[in-house]
Image 1 (tube, rainbow, N blue to C red):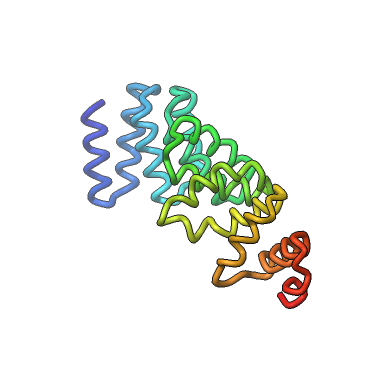
Image 2 (cartoon, rainbow, N blue to C red; image 1 turned 45 degrees about the vertical axis):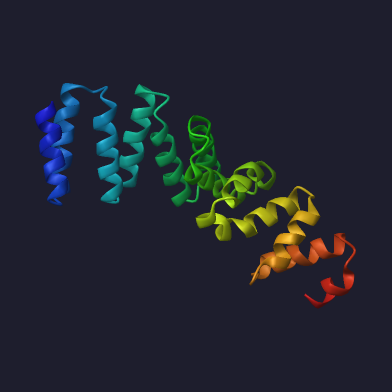
Length: 190
């Protein structure tokens, strides 16, 4: 089996994905429960834009080892890309339970939950992400929306006031937050 995996890795380095896939498939025939082979094959399918096959392999990894965290992240990401946000949030939630300190898992969870309209549930993940310098700017408006839906208007107002630009949706939320906060003069001008 090791020779099939080695040859597959060689083909991958040479950018010959079809031959690499064939070698991984041969390795799976020898050991159908090898999570490493399924994970490598899933990753290769993803890189070659064969998303359904990638998801199928990641799901097989989970069937073999329910604690294989990366599989949950990858499946969640595939669902997110397919705009199936509820499914994405389910897998991202499982990933975050297995790897609670992974900021990118928190970011996937936060985006999936907000896109699914589950702003209150997204608060914890958004707060974790907002403390990360590289993701702070991206997460701020989602965090403001989550505060808005959670009726934490002062927190939402602070973020909206500091935002350099707001799109139509966030301008509407900002106006609503201003009205709820009693600042109707500024709300009528925004």
